[in-house]
Image (cartoon, rainbow over all chains, first blue to last red; front, side, top):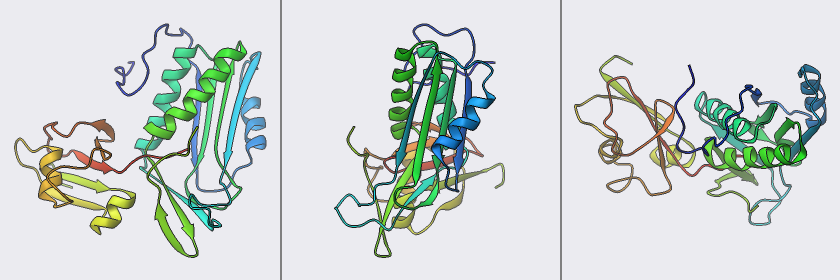
Length: 164
Length: 81
């Protein structure tokens, strides 16, 4: 039975009839974005003509310019995964794409390690690129994650997202 | 948790400011998340505008009347990705 519309997510102006393949995972361990993509692509029944990817890494400097020791990602177990799945399903329908992958780190992350990977397969570049960007931006604001910067052994919670 | 209780959860900076992350409280008829915040003395009469509410792991409203067994979480500003 379909879930009711989520007011925090964009409406589906033209729902896609074929449900997209949604693959969401949070990882406490480092992941290699390219290897993850390669493994995910091998699981897809249809390669699609267009594929968009975004991978983000932890900056080596903190918001105040100090060298960053580590970034810590706290989440709300259960709710965070379900929010990302709901965001992915909603935006996949809205853009009519075939598959969405989201990988997100949790816990302590070293500078330059991958923190997030979003990939979208579609029939055309427009929906693939737009869906990829929108999944990323939406999860930044609608999936419960909290970042804490560690500098010289002291932690500091961040209160906002980095500018687009 | 018994069927007549509520579970309250705090995360990140809110958890550290309060000094606890998880509490079980007796449910009272008509209780809302706003009343919970006030009763727990988490600061002021209601949460700052930047704090969001989750009820049973779905975003909710401050004035939603809570049911026995509900899990209520106060979420500081979200910043993933």
